[in-house]
Length: 139
Image 1 (tube, rainbow, N blue to C red):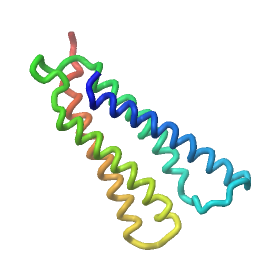
Image 2: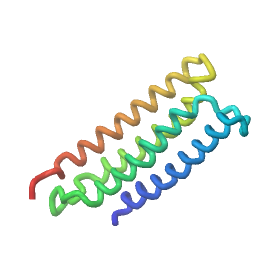
Image 3: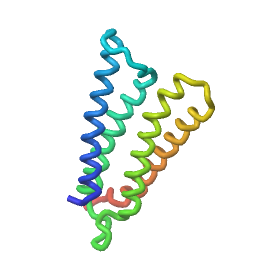
Image 4: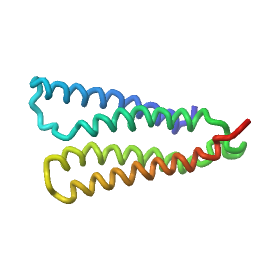
């Protein structure tokens, strides 16, 4: 299994646990058991599970298991794979910081964190599609 695939899958597992922990915090706050300033975390909870856990797990398996692009470049471009990994995870990190700030402050820079997050996630998605497109082919 390639290093990048292992990294994607292990990172996905971390996001799975973090997403579940955020879910517990949100449920505890809703029930009145937890009194922490965690406003605005629901979108991050959703993103951690949908993008951090599920999408990252899928991307890791696709990078590893899809048909070879060529014999010389079986996974097409490792550089695009790394770009996808870093852009996706930096975008998720910005979202975790930006979402609560954006919901609790009217500062413009908090909104720009969200824009930066969205652009990084878009870049990750495009890099993944570009790197994978040629591997989707008939036998």
